[in-house]
Every structure is written in structure tokens, then in C-alpha cells.
Amino acid sequence: MSRVGIMGGTFNPIHIGHLLLAECAREELQLDEVWFIPTGVSYMKAGKNDRPDESMPSAEDRLKMTELAIRENPFFRCLDIEVRRAGATYTYETLEVLKDKYPEHSFYFICGADCLYTIDRWRCPDRIFANCTLAAAVRGDTLLSEMEDQKRRLERDFQADIAVLPFRNLELSSTEIRDRIRSGRSVRYMLSEAVQRYIEEKGFYKNDRA
Ligand code: NAP
Image (cartoon, rainbow, N blue to C red; front, side):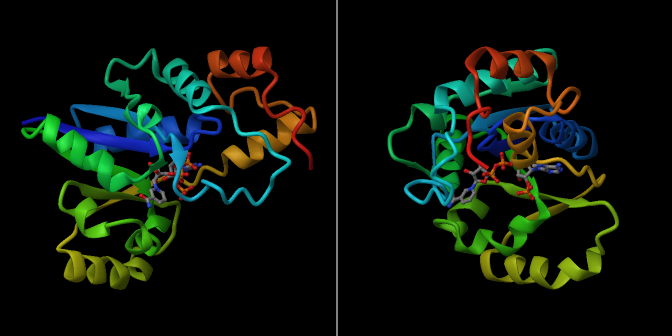
């Protein structure tokens, strides 16, 4: 039985926060591998772009950036299953596909702890929890006690398995990176060099409107 972390994300673009979180989960949860799965048409973002001036790179380009970002880590893999799937991306479907294909693996879905407060509104949360342990990354000195009630509620309502993953507070987001590129500021060291080069070659984000 292998222990596999699932790092799902829009990755628009993928940055060192995502990579550090995956590496931290691998170490803390003794995972054999972490599989990065860029979203195809994101459920939250499909048809609901609240900033229509922003151009989102295609799923293929976000997949390429993810492949470039992880290529030097032998424990990381990138899967294209959501990019290849037609229609909106739902996590429960992805986990069911994976569980069907790899019944011997146990899966850990890695996400920021805020998802403890939203996941019950994702599509079919019961089917998410049936197929993975949720690895919720708690950043910096956020009090675990503040989240205990919500964690217990999910455990009770969905028979959820939830692992709390202490993580550093790394103030970095894809939104900040896009804003910096748009306004001509440096993003060096915030992303892998290969991803930065790819973004420059393709001209992503620099023409987004403020
Ligand atoms: P994202 O913005 O690319 O982020 C990916 C993950 O990295 C998130 O869990 C995010 O947590 C975390 N992260 C980003 N920056 C970080 C930092 N500096 N430090 C620590 N953690 C950081 O992707 P997303 O759009 O949130 O999507 C995440 C996954 O949830 C995807 O697989 C998506 O399909 C899934 N999802 C599914 C549904 C559904 O099935 N209905 C709905 C929503 C999301 P934070 O968000 O806390 O920053």
C-alpha cells in the first residue's frame, strides 16, 4: 500500500508555496509520493470569472508550468487527468478515478486549512471523504483550537478522516504573482526559474488589467 498526497490546484501560476506545502506534507505524513493535479475547468471559476480582464492561461499551459515546477523532485508527479476531462473539475470525481485505478493506495488530499470551512459545499463531499484523508495545512500560529469544532463536525457528518498539517506562514499567492507581473515587478524566487521563463516566453499576466 502506497501513501500518496494529492496536490490539486488551479496553479495560476504554481509557486514555491505550493511546492513547499507538498514537500512538507510528504515529510510530515510520510507520503511515498505527491501527485500534482492541475484543474481543467475549475468548478469555482467556471463561468464565474469575476475579473473578466484577467486572462487565465489554458489548462494545457498550467499543466506545463506544473510539470516544469516539479521536475527536479523525484517524489513528485504531475497528472493530466483533470486537464483531459471535459466539463467542470470536481475533486470527488478525480478521487474516484484514482481510487478505481489504484485501489491499493491511500490518498491524502492536501489543501489549505480554510477548505475545512468550504469543503462541505463542494460537489459530493461525502464521496471526497470516502476516498481520501484530508490533509489540512494550518499556517503559522493559527490556533488549532479554532478549527477543532469544524474538524469534529466534518468527522461526525461525513465520517471524515482529517489530518492537521502544521505549516509555515508563507505570505505568497498566485494573485500576488500575477499582480506583480502585470505591474512589472520582480517575481524572482517566488516561482521556479523554469516556470518564470515559461511565463515570460508566453507573455502571461503582463497584460492583465489592474
Ligand atoms: P490554488 O489556488 O492553485 O491553490 C492550491 C492549494 O495550495 C490550495 O489548497 C491553497 O490553499 C494552497 N496554497 C496556495 N498558496 C499557499 C501558501 N502560500 N501557503 C500554503 N498553502 C498555499 O488552487 P484552488 O483553486 O484553491 O484549488 C485547490 C483544489 O481544490 C483543486 O484541486 C480544486 O479542484 C479543488 N476544489 C474542488 C471543488 C469541488 O470539487 N467542488 C471546489 C473548490 C476547490 P489556500 O486556498 O488556503 O490558499
